[in-house]
Image: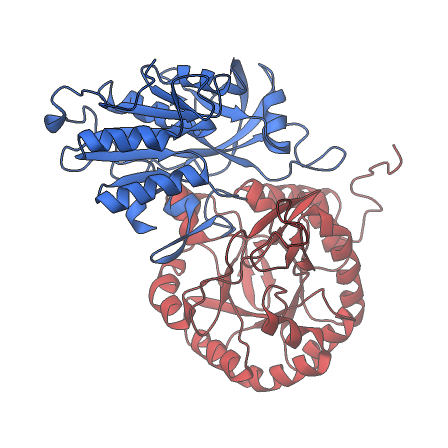
Length: 281
Length: 304
């Protein structure tokens, strides 16, 4: 495991890096209406849970797109009728057999209910929604930066752009860092130093950019991490695509609840994001 | 096929203003949205004379049985709406009802006059009730204030005019009576109820960026039933009933109280096709139990 931020990493032929498969310039559209499906499988990675959901009738999502998830039972009913609204999750991986993986962390009534689901239990799925990642410009090398449960969209993006992408992941501690197994080859930082570099993932990013600033950053994680990434990117003039999160009632532009402030005013993350250019903030 | 204020509609389910953005939904779902449009008419978000950014986030709070929103009526303003949104909404497969709000009577007159000239628009809904915006509250909370507004607006209304009432007032029936006497063509109710949530991280501070917001969802259904009955007993105007409708049974309850149309709002956030499902469920119930003919649609035991 890397414990030093000195030196950065070597990416062979970084200046000539080419994206093997380009993502579509237009978004993949969601079928209209939510669909009832089933949980097939669940696995644990430290405090995180990966659920695999059947979606044979859905299109293959773009990396960075998201879905609204609702458990079919005990959602909007039960004793206190929470959870009531669906919850938004970036897709972690999409498989050839028509299944989708999502990464969960039990932090509230919605994620708690979803974490309870067992294979065979029903859930509703709406998606894929939103605008995902776009390939690096001008043959810049991609650097993926993730924090905590926010590593999810980076996994499917790393699958798409291939092994040459450098991935830097930050976690609270070694227990949480078990989630890093979802993106093989990632370099790890932990707040308490119990695994990998002791400190912030943005320290690793700064060191990388110090070696070779000709990069494009793809980031997802907690708000303060994304703010730090945006500051670094904007100061160096490096493009950064941030997969952002915001409380969301509908996921398809109806409620106007999920806005974030940009240079052009408030934009809805669900239809204008969730991937937003750092330069736009 | 039914008729509402002279507009022919395929069924009785419409959307509540501000709970469905047909333009954004087309970006998410493509033309499939048009193939199976959930509503018999589309009611726009509120349009104001000047553009509005809306309230600072956070704008949402989930409740037991519902939610609070503090959106603050973001919109492109009349000119931007006429230029960018109206042509696209004109492509919808159903009649368009445009919701407008102004903080001054002359603003409302300008909005109503402008939309009355447009062929894309089938009817107008007057927002006198949004609890997120101070100016919207006053006009609909007081019968005399509403009467004075309608007296200047109605002469400029070239389309049917629906008054979207506020539940945050002393007597919805008095306000509805004023709407009827001063030339409104219909009333719609209930709008959201004013509410607030505390910030879990900042003691004593509100969670919502706008301070207070509007409560919606199944939590307000019982209040909707009561206010719609109160209004129906007082006025003969057509009524658009709404408030926490999640099923055809809920819609049928409002129909039995005398609502001509039923609007679906918050439930669309849980499923964009909820309106279509509710319309189908309502049609099945109305076939089996015509309004005011059946003693009970869904006999739900209350104490078990």
